[in-house]
Image 1: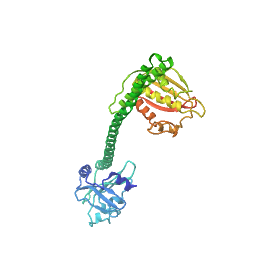
Image 2: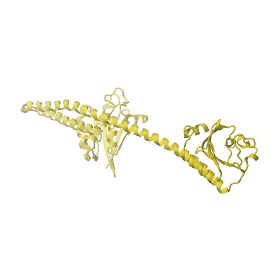
Image 3: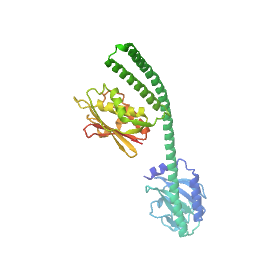
Length: 391
């Protein structure tokens, strides 16, 4: 509707527009007349939002000359409006409100095709206008709409910039809180982990020569796991902090999977893990190992009822990038939910262990490496979790 189109431009609420005023002055000069106006016509009124040669006013739609011909297919140009039956009795012609004789009006049509008003030039004496001047007035009428659209887009852009600034401030606030949280978590986790590591080392010293090969293996394995856990905590917390930078070095994913199998020994009890060829990629070894460990742990967690986990880990190397895949034989993830699981705190299985932040962290790590991550259906019938990394 015309009223809605006019309201979008906001001119009636703030009619003092220098750009429109300058354009209507140019229109008067082009037509070589003393008076010109830009009219916006609502359902009941005509608003003169920019004028030259007289004082702007608001009149009823019934009195408006331009409202009478608002929907004419072409501009209306009259040498003497008093001789036209459409205007002979109009108060702007009879002397009641004005004594218009020469009259030329060009419709203002929005990009959506809505006619919202006119660019009108007129004189109190009869006269003619050349074809060239008429064409120039039509071009100016088009520029009126262009100015309205430009102002509207500028306001929309300003709002978008304000929203972005607000989002930036919110992100900064969240990052500040994350930094504080990371420091606290670092303190809370390192203490117990240090106690575990110290106790294990004391246990190893205390056992000494009395230890069996099995106890040596178990203690050594526990110490190795604690050391890797410390490295993982340090790396993840460093990445969580604002400005945390990733190390970039060659990462042997075959070696990473071997250590992951050791660390997930309890989760993988009874599971079959097939490890096919995996590429050497470039990235942060701690971060990428954390991603792969999360995907393997998820694959082991979601199985068909009564069946042991069966995982396949494979990779593919192509010019410029590498792809790593983890397949399971579980129930799978419906297509409409494969994106949602990467949002923080989203868990499809409310009974599953975990906080629901693992895949969200994986996405953040992979994207920080310039890569991408996703879920698809596995040809084995379960879920295919994959991520791709550039060289």
